[in-house]
Amino acid sequence: MRRLLYTGLALLCSQMAIGQLKVKVAGTVTGDTEGYNKVYFYTQSAKDSAEIKNGKFEINVNEPVAGSRAISIQYDQKKRRMYSPLVLFFDQSGTINVEFDIVKGLSSATVKGMPSAVTYFSYNEERPKVFMGARQAAIAKYGEEALQKGNAQFEVANTYREGLISKGYDSLLNKYFDGNKIVSATLVLNTLSNLPTPRAEDYYNRMSDKSKSTDAGKTLYAKIQGLKNAYVGAIVKNFELPDQHGKTQSFEQHKGKYVLLDFWASWCSPCRASFPRIREVYSKLKGKNFEIVNISIDQNKSAWLKAVSDEANPWPQLYDDRKVSYEFFNVSAVPTSYLIDPTGKIIMKEIGFDPKGGGEMEKKLEEIFNIKF
Image: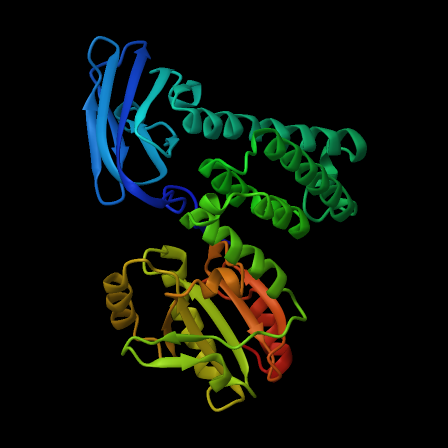
């Protein structure tokens, strides 16, 4: 089942309007570039680039907000190697120094200079060690085969591994966390899926008002509320969102029916690949006590409107301009769907959707409506 996460190269969530920032990325590169000399820097709206000359490159950008940006190298693309960008964080004007070997790629990079960039880099450099350490500990205790789905001990072994990951990430986060620093909001947000909700709340409560007022801080708060609100058995709070015609619709309008809330985005290929199958399911449940509601997490409203028109799905289309996907449902990947019963209670959550059908959500609907898709 395929997933398309908010993260990846959509690295622009940790932002705060603090005036124009003058950021310089100064690079030192060893090894033979073989003529593949470009380094790319991805801004919110464009892709900037610089040439590596005599083992050096420099990129100067003016950024309106603090946040995360990625750099990549032409050498990776031309050599058809795995695309491995390096994410840089900045929260002030200044210089970020990046050093790497061209043959080893950006995975060999070190980051110096701007303190927030160093903190962000150092934290993310240690994260894989936590993951691998937890895996090795689980293998030592249960055996490698126990971590394979279908094994009789998979559940207990995986639960043990996940517990070690959670504790390890919490310890690592605590090492780098400083509530007065903007970058900490992003670190907590990036670790949220591996933290118990009370620990996430503790980190948030230790953040300064300045950190809480960043987009990352606001998103973190909303996601923590989502963790508390969106669990199987929870009653969905009413919310209102605009449809493609600008008319406000509320969740209460659909109370009394089984409702499949499907979170998606115009840029999410797996989401759109799933729609033909979802339309088949919808047609077989037409006239029954059932409704589908699409909620888009698009930031580009025009792109969403075009996709809505292109897909022409025969069920309500809503635009999430109020962080409902975070605060009410803690959506961390799209497509994500929630099945809600006529009383408004969440009875199932599914991340991803198999366009060929046969997924767990379909099985649940078959059970409820005594039908075979």
